[in-house]
Length: 166
Image 1: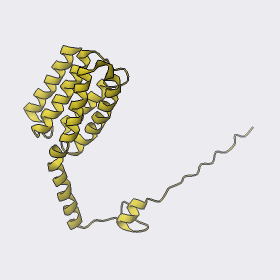
Image 2 (image 1 turned 180 degrees about the horizontal axis):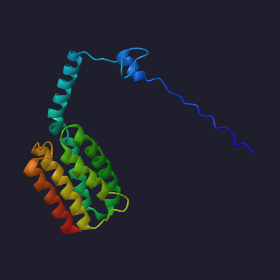
Image 3 (image 1 turned 90 degrees about the vertical axis):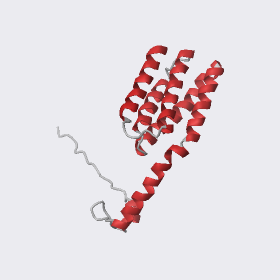
Image 4 (image 1 turned 30 degrees about the vertical axis):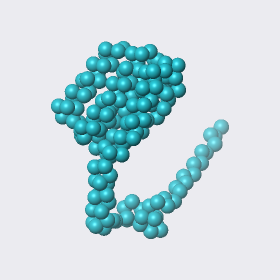
């Protein structure tokens, strides 16, 4: 008894974005950007990076307000955890992109602490607040990269807060 042959078709959709960058029939190997275009793009990106601490303040303020609601209204914690988790996810992605990997680290941890199985005790909210404070300190201090000694201290302070309130 012969097994039926399995036929597989591979579809490669057109990469319209690549075509816009390099013309029809463009591929990653054939698209070449001029040095001027690359320099201009890099300069624009560096400007956005330098502005990140300023425009992320609104997000941090929203996060702080949600933590305050959680502290003052225990019955609203679950619904606000979802909102905090969304912001944490956003911060986690932004941090590394804009040169603040500590924000990504703290955002990732905050995301986990506000998940579906998160505790709703006052102590748990204090842990969430500690994450928020760590992100604010990182942004307000403009602590980029791993933060050196200050970054190590911030991570240690967060770990101590987690240990204290768990």
